[in-house]
Length: 351
Image 1: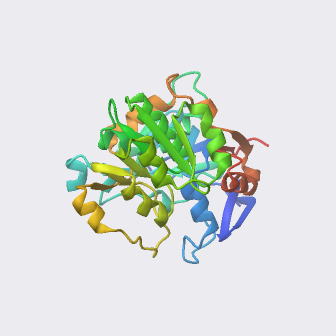
Image 2: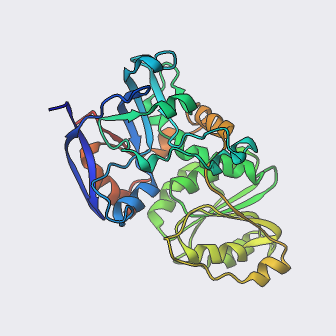
Image 3: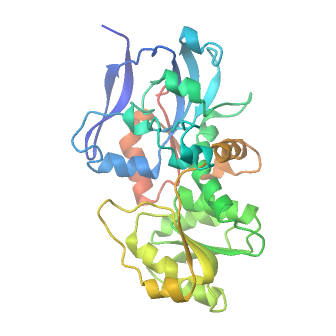
């Protein structure tokens, strides 16, 4: 019998059990982390509450991982030391394919995907030789809280988004979705010089939490028509940049209607598989809109996002509203779905 650990194991949609499982052994050429903190992401919730693996269970999710190196293979000792605290970006880009070489690491054709190996909703997680060779791990400076460092992962994609669409001085930015991603996008847009940030959501609790972040306008789209309100707030011109950061096809329809002529519309949040969005392409055509589908981040953006997430310039403490033991993962999911929690970080090795 090998060593055991506690993990949150998914057996099917909404069937997540906190139980004892085998602790991972150190892969040849790899290393093992003791998970100190792991963020609960919106995509985790989507995966845990749907048949995300087409019946292929049990499985352990969790990809916003910060931990302490506790076991290192002989081959990896030049890269990692026992006791080292690191953040691990969930996807290891190959850095060799055509997409990587052109700077689009987020479209790497030879990824080691985090959904192909057991994740971080567990006391320990193992990483392979391929991960060691590719890197995308970052050492926490002394004194940095592992809980705060978990924000580096959601930061990476939002950082890349505002960078790629060049949110800049004087912009009006409308963001549909006031979850953690929408909050990140709002804060980063203001940091880059946006004159006006408009945040929209259907959940008043989320908007109430967003009020702490110096966002110019908060719109409850269950009470007010968001398209009409954005146009009203922009003298009937529309927003320079509109980002749909939620899983709604309706939001994508609204996004193109609230953008200014020649503006940029970003489809950031993935919608449920199989659902299609009806778009009035005449609006896109005659208004000269740029439509940008955003996903992931390139290698340098991942590093820059990590450095910003752990810096004093970013209000990470305000974004993380709940820190709970891993055993409370089902409670964490409910708090987030209801909008009572903005961002939950789980602690697998604390009760």
